Image (cartoon, rainbow, N blue to C red; front, side):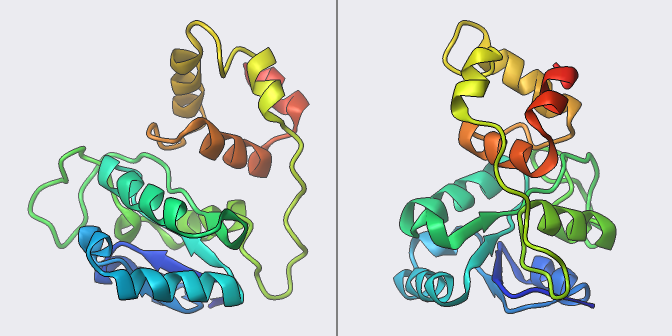
Length: 191
């Protein structure tokens, strides 16, 4: 079991159950879209984020990004880290049919994928060095044609697919993920 300093927020109880078998960390639930109505739960997340940091770990489908963005808009970003699972087609064992977008959620990921996502997010793991510093800037994305220009959104989508990152990532989320995974030179080589 890997001990993580930050608390982790997930969408529901099945995600929580999966993570609790892999990591030793406080794991909180949004109850899916319930977070939009539950001001007390959002306030708890805010306080936990300020006290020990919070890793947002939602599914890579549209609903997961709506929940992630709601949390991101309600809590100061300096207290948040974002863990992303890759887009993998399939369905969870407990379900009779895949979800609307046909993608596995957090609960359907292997322990290795979950730990990799947490490491990439910069989780403070007991006995491991601090995460890498950012190396790629927004200006780099502009110069590489990934932001602010004609066809940049299509180019970003192609890059996200090539890197097996969720297609719903915003430019800022993609920048954060790129900085956790690559140097500027490595990104240029990928393009």
